[in-house]
Length: 113
Length: 113
Image (tube, rainbow over all chains, first blue to last red; front, side, top):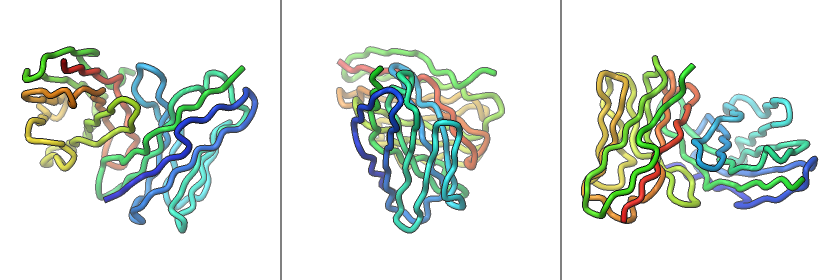
């Protein structure tokens, strides 16, 4: 079955710097890759997602890139702010076949003011 | 509009007792998922329901775990004869279909003493 690896497990940056989180997946059939942000005591919230027919997607300060050949995808946050501090999860799924998401173990991002 | 709601928000039980966790999905969402999040870990898929189809139970860790979805809406996850290793946050998510974004509830924090 699918396996998703996520790195780093913790990341500390200064406010205004960029943050990059990387994930790799094992099943070449996976075609949907969402990123979720989870704040303490809350459920995960989708921040951006990408499908396998697209190599890059951007939404304001957040971008995701996908390399299908290498089977890895990355989250990029520019101009980080203290409110970006949270745990970020990547996930992979096979849309059209299975519904469940396979998650990475998460990255705890700390943005220092 | 209203998001996914879960109850109770916290549950403390004794080893060996049965517990029921409830999920109210977003109105009109046909797909419903249960995940488990152990301390410091990613989300582990448990079970998902899609419309009137038979549920995908492939993620349930043992036969002590079961779930049902009545009338295509509310779902209940039942854990029988709870064990300490069942302590975790149980998250529910719903989506319009298996090819749509999954929206998560706040979770139920279960502690088995």
